Image (cartoon, rainbow, N blue to C red):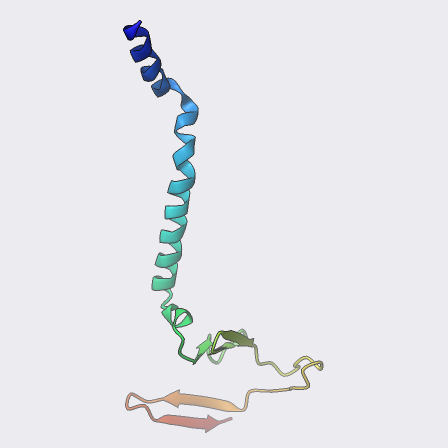
Amino acid sequence: MRRRLIDRRDGDDGDPMSVVGNLFDVAMVFAVALMVALVSHYNMTEMLNSEDFTMVKNPGKENMEIITKEGSKINRYTPSENQDEKNGSRGKRVGIAYELENGEIIYVPE
C-alpha cells in the first residue's frame, strides 16, 4: 500500500500540461524585459520622467514630427503646408535652427 502512494506522486512528471502553467510567467518576464530594452535603446527615458520636454524627429525632412510632453499630456505635431482647418492652425517651414555646442541657438531663415 505504501508503494502505491509513492507511485502516484511520481506520476505527475509525465503530464505534458504541467509545464503550461509556467509559460504565462515566462511570457510576462520576456515582455517586460523587451519593453525595458526598447526604452533604453531608443533613449526614451524622458517619457517616464515628470519633466516637460520637446523632441524633434527627422528634423528638416518631409516626415518631421515635433513631440512635446507637458505634465502627463503628450502632444504630436506634424508641420506641413496644409494643416487641418478644424484646429484653426496653419503652418509652414520658415527656416532652420541650429544649436551650438555651447548651447546657443542660431536661426537661419529660408
